[in-house]
Amino acid sequence: MTVTSPGEMAIKTEGDIVLVRRTAREVAMQTGFGATDVTRIVTASSEMARNIFKYAGEGCMRWRTSERDGLPGIELEFEDHGPGIADLNLALQEGYTTGEGLGMGLPGAKRLMDELEIRSQVGKGTKVVLRKWKRTLQ
Amino acid sequence: MNAENISVIKVRELLMVTMPSDPDDPTISALQEKVLNAMERHEAKGVVLDISAVETLDSFFARTISETAQMVTLMGGRTIIAGMRPAVAVTATELGLTLGTVETALNVDRALDMVNKPEKQA
Image (cartoon, rainbow over all chains, first blue to last red; front, side, top):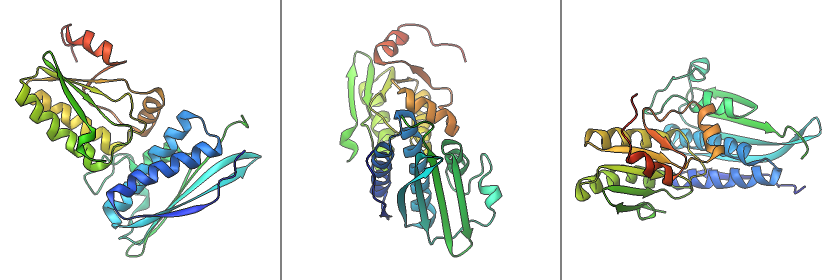
């Protein structure tokens, strides 16, 4: 199994959303995920990157591989120093949006991944951690 | 990547639109204008949007497709989305994406078959 080294990239432009998808795809594939899981991971990452670009202007994505119960997994962290989210429960609700989005960014990403951890402070920023593990070794 | 990556070809009375595998947001936004202008210019009856190369369909992309289809309807045309990959279909459903009332086809070939049949009732 290839061990992917952790890394970080900035999200500042619309083009960076494409780079986030490419990076997430590469890390997910190297972790050994199948085509459907890779697509889930890339799509969730795309939603998070666009949120950062749209609401915070800029931020970053950090990636690393992890392990749970002997199975490899992926951890993607999206951090910004934007306006923050006042009501996290509301933001995680189906159909809730403050922008022109469909309101499925956070709840949608949560469904696509195994875990979504979010911390946010109004005026300070937001950090979202997405995690997914492989179901079997092969 | 830019709007040039979207290919729009007129075949008989239809527009065949092919999306690149991983378009950026400006390219996706350009899709709308490009398709609508081509509808008018070519007096097309409808649009077949080939997304068989598309590897990621997120909420922005899906919304643009669904809006474009609505606009094509307003112009009197019909839109058929063709060739969604299995992994994309699974992910789109889990994400909660719907393409509204847009018609879909397994591939471009089937989409062309559909055009020759009456529109299905919603």
